[in-house]
Length: 231
Image 1 (cartoon, helix red, strand yellow):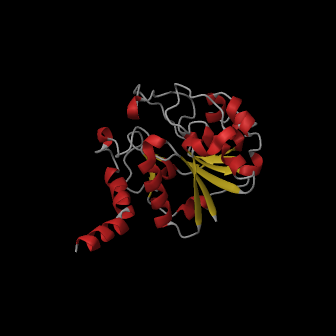
Image 2: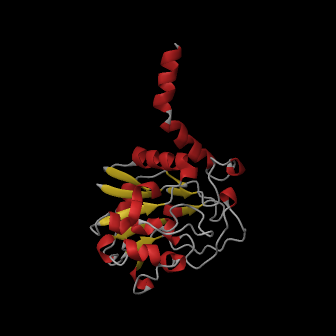
Image 3: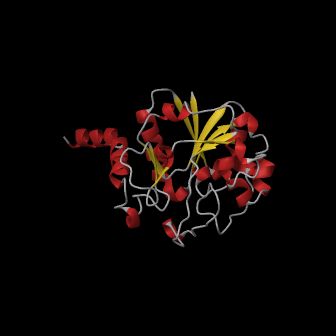
């Protein structure tokens, strides 16, 4: 079983469901998917909303090892993505030499805002934490108490590790940044980091058709039911 945790934002509910469907539709191994949803975390997550955080899961994502009982490996990913490849290929990249693995983007955004007017924060290791393979037993420092108290930069810049040597690298096609990385029709995991096609402002972005096809595929059963009722 491949355990996947997806950041959940109530403003992007459709994104969570489309990503989940796209993962399952390409997977060749059993996958369990859980949203990291603030309403389900209760007292585990007590941080106040930071005006600089652009999503509701900006910091709660780092509870993934705790929610996995610090056992085995787990995958975390933002919800504003769509999968076009078999997640088993990503899962096969696990390397016990590392505590966490990610795409090591050199991402220096120039815009000041992104979707829904969110502030575009700029820092080293930007977007490294948007897709992570956690080697959970080596991430025991990420307790609820630590995640609630640590600064955003301490979390997102992996300062909770002893050194950057504990960070393994994933191939860039597994976190393709739309609008930043050179266009890649073969991207395995597409990340609409500026804003997904479900927002009018980004309806024509790269891979908008990829997301729309995943959305349409998710509705096939419902469309068939409606046609049958209309017949």
